[in-house]
Image (cartoon, rainbow, N blue to C red; front, side, top):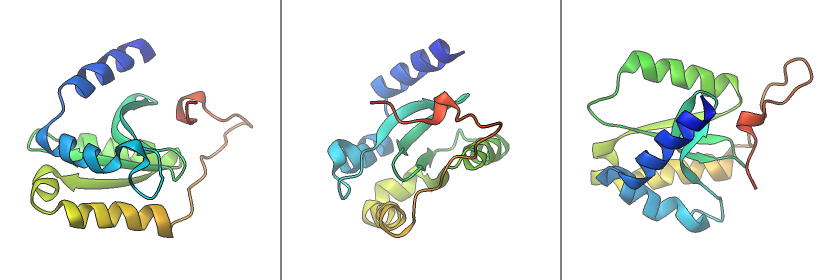
Length: 131
């Protein structure tokens, strides 16, 4: 499963949507107050559009193809593993990137990082930051 998700993530990184290109331009290279974001990152059984492990924030962009039930399941899983999910429509990014950036920035600066729940004394490898 992990190799399959890594393969999917590589494909998604090679074929970003216009909204993903715009938001990545603002998040990459620690451009947001020095916070490191990764794009199309496999986490558990999902591929997050963007993630900041230090602040445990997942940024998801939604186009017309998204199913609210599937998104709800993803959000529930991410939140159960200590992530805060910020979800934006593609047209929000295309028409109001400053507003989207401000929301992400506010969460990075104002909110302490969530900690992953530890079950049975183990910390799942899939949700730790890679070096």
